[in-house]
Length: 263
Ligand code: NAD
View 1 (cartoon, rainbow, N blue to C red):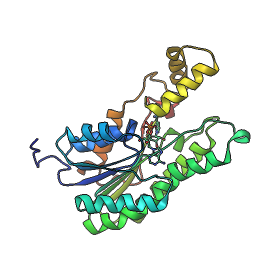
View 2 (cartoon, rainbow, N blue to C red; view 1 turned 180 degrees about the vertical axis):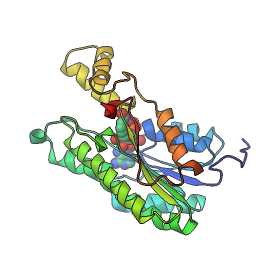
View 3 (cartoon, rainbow, N blue to C red; view 1 turned 90 degrees about the vertical axis):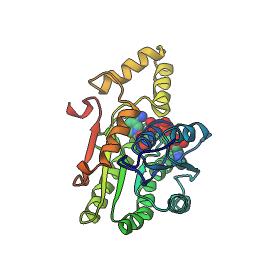
View 4 (cartoon, protein in one colour; view 1 turned 30 degrees about the vertical axis):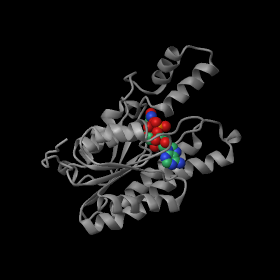
Protein backbone atom coordinates (compact mmCIF):
# COMPACT_ATOMS: atom_id res chain seq x y z
CA UNK A 1 0.00 0.00 0.00
CA UNK A 2 1.27 3.50 -0.84
CA UNK A 3 1.16 5.85 2.14
CA UNK A 4 0.82 9.59 1.58
CA UNK A 5 3.75 11.33 3.33
CA UNK A 6 1.33 14.09 4.32
CA UNK A 7 0.13 11.92 7.19
CA UNK A 8 0.96 13.77 10.43
CA UNK A 9 3.21 11.05 11.88
CA UNK A 10 4.77 9.81 8.61
CA UNK A 11 8.40 8.77 9.16
CA UNK A 12 8.05 8.65 12.95
CA UNK A 13 8.55 5.55 15.07
CA UNK A 14 6.33 4.59 18.00
CA UNK A 15 6.86 1.97 20.68
CA UNK A 16 3.64 0.89 22.39
CA UNK A 17 4.18 -1.43 25.34
CA UNK A 18 1.57 -4.12 25.99
CA UNK A 19 0.07 -3.74 22.52
CA UNK A 20 -0.83 -7.30 21.52
CA UNK A 21 -4.37 -6.62 22.83
CA UNK A 22 -6.71 -4.07 24.34
CA UNK A 23 -5.92 -0.38 24.69
CA UNK A 24 -2.32 -0.77 23.54
CA UNK A 25 -3.42 -2.28 20.22
CA UNK A 26 -6.05 0.47 19.85
CA UNK A 27 -3.39 3.14 20.35
CA UNK A 28 -0.89 1.41 18.04
CA UNK A 29 -3.57 1.26 15.33
CA UNK A 30 -4.44 4.96 15.71
CA UNK A 31 -0.76 5.97 15.51
CA UNK A 32 -0.26 3.71 12.48
CA UNK A 33 -3.26 5.32 10.74
CA UNK A 34 -1.52 8.66 11.36
CA UNK A 35 1.55 7.25 9.56
CA UNK A 36 3.92 6.10 12.34
CA UNK A 37 5.92 2.88 12.10
CA UNK A 38 5.09 0.72 15.11
CA UNK A 39 7.01 -1.50 17.50
CA UNK A 40 4.50 -3.76 19.21
CA UNK A 41 5.21 -5.47 22.52
CA UNK A 42 3.30 -7.89 24.71
CA UNK A 43 2.53 -11.53 25.36
CA UNK A 44 0.60 -14.00 23.22
CA UNK A 45 0.77 -14.54 19.46
CA UNK A 46 1.69 -11.15 17.95
CA UNK A 47 0.64 -12.16 14.39
CA UNK A 48 -2.95 -10.78 14.47
CA UNK A 49 -1.79 -7.46 15.96
CA UNK A 50 1.07 -7.19 13.44
CA UNK A 51 -1.38 -7.86 10.59
CA UNK A 52 -3.78 -5.20 11.91
CA UNK A 53 -0.98 -2.60 11.99
CA UNK A 54 0.53 -3.57 8.62
CA UNK A 55 -2.93 -3.28 7.00
CA UNK A 56 -2.65 0.50 7.51
CA UNK A 57 0.41 0.57 5.24
CA UNK A 58 3.11 1.35 7.83
CA UNK A 59 5.95 -0.93 8.92
CA UNK A 60 5.53 -2.95 12.11
CA UNK A 61 7.71 -5.17 14.28
CA UNK A 62 7.22 -7.00 17.57
CA UNK A 63 9.61 -7.21 20.51
CA UNK A 64 8.77 -9.61 23.33
CA UNK A 65 10.34 -7.71 26.26
CA UNK A 66 8.87 -8.66 29.62
CA UNK A 67 8.06 -5.25 31.06
CA UNK A 68 8.87 -6.46 34.58
CA UNK A 69 12.56 -6.76 33.56
CA UNK A 70 14.59 -3.56 33.22
CA UNK A 71 17.25 -5.06 30.91
CA UNK A 72 14.57 -6.27 28.49
CA UNK A 73 12.94 -2.83 28.50
CA UNK A 74 16.27 -1.27 27.49
CA UNK A 75 16.56 -3.88 24.74
CA UNK A 76 13.05 -2.94 23.50
CA UNK A 77 13.99 0.73 23.15
CA UNK A 78 17.29 -0.16 21.45
CA UNK A 79 15.41 -2.51 19.09
CA UNK A 80 13.08 0.33 17.99
CA UNK A 81 16.02 2.62 17.29
CA UNK A 82 17.96 -0.02 15.36
CA UNK A 83 14.94 -1.34 13.40
CA UNK A 84 13.40 1.96 12.34
CA UNK A 85 16.27 4.40 12.88
CA UNK A 86 14.93 6.27 15.88
CA UNK A 87 12.25 6.54 18.53
CA UNK A 88 9.81 9.44 18.52
CA UNK A 89 6.79 8.22 20.47
CA UNK A 90 6.75 6.01 23.56
CA UNK A 91 3.42 4.82 24.91
CA UNK A 92 3.78 3.21 28.33
CA UNK A 93 0.68 1.07 28.35
CA UNK A 94 1.47 -2.47 29.58
CA UNK A 95 -0.43 -3.15 32.77
CA UNK A 96 -2.01 -5.86 34.87
CA UNK A 97 -4.61 -5.92 37.61
CA UNK A 98 -5.24 -7.96 40.75
CA UNK A 99 -8.14 -7.37 43.13
CA UNK A 100 -7.86 -8.32 46.81
CA UNK A 101 -7.96 -6.58 50.19
CA UNK A 102 -4.64 -5.31 51.55
CA UNK A 103 -4.55 -7.90 54.35
CA UNK A 104 -4.92 -10.74 51.84
CA UNK A 105 -2.90 -9.25 48.97
CA UNK A 106 -0.17 -11.69 47.84
CA UNK A 107 3.24 -9.98 48.16
CA UNK A 108 4.46 -11.31 44.82
CA UNK A 109 1.38 -9.80 43.10
CA UNK A 110 2.15 -6.42 44.69
CA UNK A 111 5.73 -6.58 43.41
CA UNK A 112 4.61 -7.64 39.92
CA UNK A 113 2.03 -4.83 39.59
CA UNK A 114 4.48 -2.18 40.79
CA UNK A 115 7.12 -3.53 38.37
CA UNK A 116 4.89 -3.67 35.26
CA UNK A 117 2.48 -0.78 35.90
CA UNK A 118 4.94 1.71 37.43
CA UNK A 119 8.66 0.84 37.28
CA UNK A 120 8.48 -0.16 33.59
CA UNK A 121 7.29 3.36 32.78
CA UNK A 122 10.40 4.75 34.50
CA UNK A 123 12.78 2.33 32.78
CA UNK A 124 11.33 2.88 29.30
CA UNK A 125 11.22 6.66 29.70
CA UNK A 126 14.79 6.68 31.01
CA UNK A 127 15.98 4.77 27.95
CA UNK A 128 13.88 6.74 25.42
CA UNK A 129 14.47 10.35 26.51
CA UNK A 130 18.08 10.67 25.28
CA UNK A 131 16.99 9.48 21.80
CA UNK A 132 14.05 11.91 21.72
CA UNK A 133 16.14 14.83 22.99
CA UNK A 134 18.73 14.15 20.28
CA UNK A 135 15.94 14.22 17.66
CA UNK A 136 14.52 17.47 19.06
CA UNK A 137 10.96 16.09 19.20
CA UNK A 138 9.23 13.40 21.20
CA UNK A 139 6.08 12.23 22.87
CA UNK A 140 5.84 10.10 26.01
CA UNK A 141 2.26 9.05 26.70
CA UNK A 142 1.61 7.20 29.93
CA UNK A 143 -1.56 5.16 30.19
CA UNK A 144 -2.51 5.78 33.79
CA UNK A 145 -6.15 5.41 34.87
CA UNK A 146 -8.85 7.09 36.89
CA UNK A 147 -7.08 5.03 39.56
CA UNK A 148 -4.12 7.38 39.18
CA UNK A 149 -6.35 10.05 40.73
CA UNK A 150 -8.77 8.21 43.06
CA UNK A 151 -8.89 4.87 44.87
CA UNK A 152 -11.17 1.83 44.79
CA UNK A 153 -11.53 -0.99 47.31
CA UNK A 154 -9.33 -4.03 46.58
CA UNK A 155 -6.96 -2.29 44.17
CA UNK A 156 -4.12 -1.21 46.47
CA UNK A 157 -1.22 -2.14 44.20
CA UNK A 158 -2.90 -0.88 41.03
CA UNK A 159 -3.96 2.43 42.59
CA UNK A 160 -0.52 2.95 44.16
CA UNK A 161 1.19 2.20 40.83
CA UNK A 162 -1.12 4.46 38.81
CA UNK A 163 -0.76 7.35 41.29
CA UNK A 164 2.98 6.82 40.86
CA UNK A 165 2.62 7.04 37.08
CA UNK A 166 0.86 10.41 37.43
CA UNK A 167 3.70 11.68 39.64
CA UNK A 168 6.34 10.37 37.26
CA UNK A 169 4.52 12.03 34.34
CA UNK A 170 4.74 15.41 36.08
CA UNK A 171 8.46 15.11 36.84
CA UNK A 172 9.30 13.90 33.32
CA UNK A 173 7.22 16.78 31.87
CA UNK A 174 9.16 19.29 33.98
CA UNK A 175 12.55 17.81 33.12
CA UNK A 176 11.74 18.12 29.38
CA UNK A 177 9.76 21.37 29.59
CA UNK A 178 12.21 23.39 27.48
CA UNK A 179 12.51 20.77 24.76
CA UNK A 180 10.33 19.47 21.93
CA UNK A 181 9.57 16.40 24.03
CA UNK A 182 6.26 16.34 25.91
CA UNK A 183 5.11 13.89 28.58
CA UNK A 184 1.43 13.41 29.43
CA UNK A 185 -0.93 10.83 30.90
CA UNK A 186 -4.27 9.47 29.73
CA UNK A 187 -6.65 8.36 32.49
CA UNK A 188 -9.28 5.96 31.18
CA UNK A 189 -12.30 4.85 33.18
CA UNK A 190 -13.81 1.49 32.18
CA UNK A 191 -12.76 0.33 28.70
CA UNK A 192 -13.92 -3.14 27.61
CA UNK A 193 -10.68 -5.13 27.18
CA UNK A 194 -9.49 -8.57 28.39
CA UNK A 195 -8.27 -6.90 31.63
CA UNK A 196 -11.80 -5.67 32.42
CA UNK A 197 -13.57 -8.77 31.10
CA UNK A 198 -11.75 -10.77 33.81
CA UNK A 199 -13.20 -8.45 36.47
CA UNK A 200 -16.72 -8.79 35.00
CA UNK A 201 -16.41 -12.59 34.97
CA UNK A 202 -15.21 -12.57 38.60
CA UNK A 203 -18.13 -10.34 39.66
CA UNK A 204 -20.65 -12.57 37.85
CA UNK A 205 -19.17 -15.65 39.56
CA UNK A 206 -18.98 -14.03 43.03
CA UNK A 207 -22.55 -12.70 42.98
CA UNK A 208 -24.08 -15.52 40.92
CA UNK A 209 -25.38 -13.17 38.22
CA UNK A 210 -25.33 -13.15 34.44
CA UNK A 211 -22.41 -11.56 32.56
CA UNK A 212 -24.87 -8.93 31.28
CA UNK A 213 -26.03 -8.00 34.80
CA UNK A 214 -22.44 -8.02 36.09
CA UNK A 215 -21.43 -5.66 33.26
CA UNK A 216 -24.24 -3.23 34.12
CA UNK A 217 -23.39 -3.43 37.84
CA UNK A 218 -19.69 -2.77 37.22
CA UNK A 219 -20.42 0.26 35.02
CA UNK A 220 -23.23 1.54 37.23
CA UNK A 221 -21.07 1.66 40.35
CA UNK A 222 -18.58 4.20 38.95
CA UNK A 223 -19.16 5.35 35.38
CA UNK A 224 -22.11 7.78 35.00
CA UNK A 225 -22.35 7.29 31.23
CA UNK A 226 -23.09 3.58 31.92
CA UNK A 227 -21.15 2.75 28.77
CA UNK A 228 -17.55 1.77 28.09
CA UNK A 229 -14.98 4.04 26.49
CA UNK A 230 -13.51 2.28 23.43
CA UNK A 231 -9.92 1.47 22.54
CA UNK A 232 -10.43 3.55 19.37
CA UNK A 233 -11.31 6.59 21.49
CA UNK A 234 -8.21 6.15 23.64
CA UNK A 235 -6.19 5.78 20.43
CA UNK A 236 -7.67 9.02 19.13
CA UNK A 237 -6.64 10.88 22.29
CA UNK A 238 -3.09 9.48 21.99
CA UNK A 239 -2.92 10.63 18.36
CA UNK A 240 -4.10 14.07 19.46
CA UNK A 241 -1.26 14.22 22.03
CA UNK A 242 1.13 13.60 19.13
CA UNK A 243 -0.28 16.54 17.15
CA UNK A 244 1.04 20.11 17.00
CA UNK A 245 -2.04 21.29 18.89
CA UNK A 246 -0.65 19.47 21.93
CA UNK A 247 2.87 20.98 21.75
CA UNK A 248 2.39 22.87 25.00
CA UNK A 249 0.47 20.20 26.87
CA UNK A 250 2.98 19.06 29.47
CA UNK A 251 2.28 16.94 32.53
CA UNK A 252 -1.47 16.77 31.78
CA UNK A 253 -3.89 14.06 32.89
CA UNK A 254 -6.50 13.53 30.20
CA UNK A 255 -9.59 11.79 31.61
CA UNK A 256 -11.60 9.54 29.29
CA UNK A 257 -13.93 8.19 31.93
CA UNK A 258 -17.62 8.68 31.10
CA UNK A 259 -17.82 11.21 33.94
CA UNK A 260 -16.33 8.94 36.66
CA UNK A 261 -14.21 11.74 38.15
CA UNK A 262 -16.80 14.48 37.70
CA UNK A 263 -18.76 13.07 40.65
P1 NAD B 1 -5.07 -5.99 28.35
O1 NAD B 1 -4.97 -7.07 29.35
O2 NAD B 1 -6.04 -6.08 27.22
O3 NAD B 1 -3.65 -5.70 27.67
C1 NAD B 1 -2.49 -5.65 28.43
C2 NAD B 1 -1.31 -5.80 27.51
O4 NAD B 1 -0.13 -5.80 28.31
C3 NAD B 1 -1.29 -7.12 26.73
O5 NAD B 1 -0.74 -6.88 25.43
C4 NAD B 1 -0.33 -7.99 27.53
O6 NAD B 1 0.31 -8.99 26.76
C5 NAD B 1 0.66 -6.94 27.99
N1 NAD B 1 1.43 -7.32 29.15
C6 NAD B 1 1.02 -7.74 30.37
N2 NAD B 1 2.08 -8.01 31.16
C7 NAD B 1 3.18 -7.72 30.42
C8 NAD B 1 4.58 -7.80 30.67
N3 NAD B 1 5.07 -8.23 31.84
N4 NAD B 1 5.42 -7.45 29.69
C9 NAD B 1 4.96 -7.05 28.46
N5 NAD B 1 3.65 -6.96 28.18
C10 NAD B 1 2.78 -7.30 29.15
O7 NAD B 1 -5.31 -4.66 29.23
P2 NAD B 1 -5.89 -3.22 28.87
O8 NAD B 1 -7.21 -3.08 29.53
O9 NAD B 1 -5.78 -2.93 27.42
O10 NAD B 1 -4.88 -2.31 29.69
C11 NAD B 1 -3.86 -1.54 29.08
C12 NAD B 1 -3.48 -0.41 30.02
O11 NAD B 1 -4.61 0.45 30.22
C13 NAD B 1 -3.04 -0.87 31.40
O12 NAD B 1 -1.96 -0.08 31.86
C14 NAD B 1 -4.27 -0.62 32.25
O13 NAD B 1 -3.95 -0.42 33.60
C15 NAD B 1 -4.80 0.64 31.60
N6 NAD B 1 -6.21 0.90 31.86
C16 NAD B 1 -7.19 0.03 31.44
C17 NAD B 1 -8.51 0.34 31.71
C18 NAD B 1 -9.63 -0.53 31.24
O14 NAD B 1 -10.79 -0.27 31.64
N7 NAD B 1 -9.40 -1.53 30.44
C19 NAD B 1 -8.84 1.50 32.43
C20 NAD B 1 -7.81 2.33 32.85
C21 NAD B 1 -6.51 2.03 32.55
